[in-house]
Length: 151
Image (cartoon, rainbow, N blue to C red):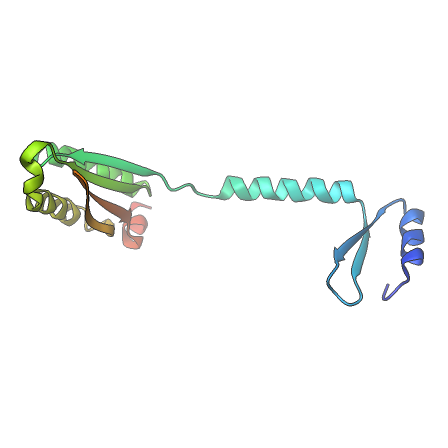
């Protein structure tokens, strides 16, 4: 309708039995629209709900190891990690030290490297092995190629 005085705009909205809604208050002159405001709010909340539904929540699964965990048990855990990575989840691999084991972090580092190597076809190392107190952690994320193979 172009530039219209406020009184005229209110009159137009009243005649149409709708609301006069200010859309862009910072524009010069401010932009208003004649619409059903209740319907507008309803549709906006509906769109927001739909957007929330379509969002993907990235889940982080965890496998726990010890420096003394043998090959056989580690293979079970890496098999679980492989399944989770194929499903698009991240995997945190933790090695927990007890007692004097903490003096040999290279054992845990080797274990974490082997797990990363085993899963290198479908995962990338997102967070390199890091020592925090008596726990060494590493985070694996699904790689792009791995997702394509799974589909």
